[in-house]
Structure formats: structure tokens, C-alpha cells
Length: 100
Image 1: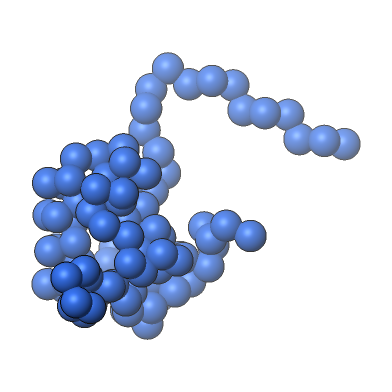
Image 2 (image 1 turned 90 degrees about the vertical axis):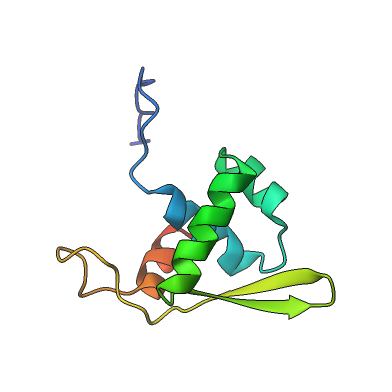
């Protein structure tokens, strides 16, 4: 029996944070520019800059300069931050949400 689509919601919340969205994009497309990330996630470039800085500072993302561009690498073995999910790592989460 096919699954019925979920009813449209009047609120705009999602189950994953913008931090997760940024990580998921940069994991599969390491050379995206901030403008592209912002458009795909639906936030400002400034918000993407802040998220990337936070992820770098806490060891979840590494930035490498390639000429004039940046390339990003997600550190997959870092644990998730909340105590409820800390038994899992970033790689587990990204495997769950990756596109096939």
C-alpha cells in the first residue's frame, strides 16, 4: 500500500537544524561557495559564514584553501552534541539524510 503524503503544515519548522543542512551540503559538494550554500539552505550568506565558523571552531568542519576558493571536509567521526544522541557521530547522521 503506497504511503500517503503528509498534510501541508502551516509552520515552517524542520527536524534538522541549519547547521546540519550546511554540513550535508558541504559533505557531498565540498567546493560550494557560501552564496550557493545560502540559497540551498534558505538562509543568508552571513548566517552560513557564522555556521561554518562555529563548525570549524568545534572541530566538525575543516577548511582548505585551494587557490582563491575554499574546499571543506566534514569530520565524520565527531560525536553529535546533545546527550540524547551523543552515542552517534556526524557520519551516522549524514548517512541517514544523504540523497541516493
